[in-house]
Length: 201
Ligand code: MN
Image 1 (cartoon, rainbow, N blue to C red):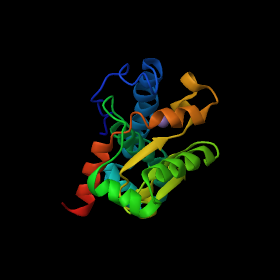
Image 2 (cartoon, helix red, strand yellow):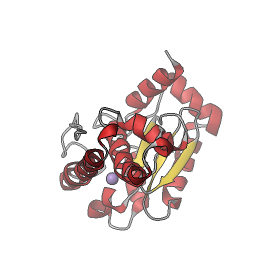
Image 3 (cartoon, rainbow, N blue to C red):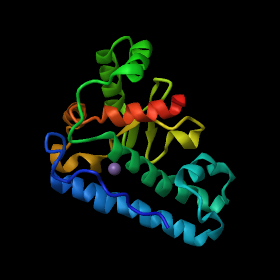
Image 4 (spheres, protein in one colour):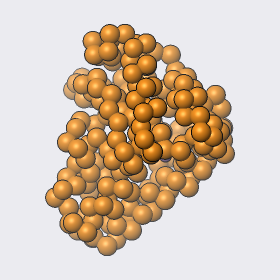
């Protein structure tokens, strides 16, 4: 059975980004619901037991047809949120360093250009979706709970949730303020660790 991952920080520890009530709802209600519904899909398809969510998503087209939508929506919701919690930290913000900074500068010209491109893509997502930094430096977006690994892409380094449930309680319709505040909590250390793992270092 899949389980809701514990956070390494408190719901009230990201106040410059989102408040405790929003964090609590987002983690304990929204993410928990994806986990519960993913487990319900597995119950109906016991042959999928003991496979990781990454494995299920990466082979989505090979799963029983009746399970594909459920795994895509709820497995995607579980995977995406699990990475989102790792993408932010009370000790986050600032800029990446080392190999990750080099990747970003090589691909986008400067760190500020990267921030501007990521931000404009986040604001351009129509409806619900996600923004991702890929280990080749690309900034991509997905709709709903679609996830890069289900599209045959490498595991992302970090992600931003731009569903309304991720910001509406604190920001109402102002997604731009939410995205701007996100840069103050980005966990570049976690993203750098994921990049090193991708590089095999
Ligand atoms: Mn969310």
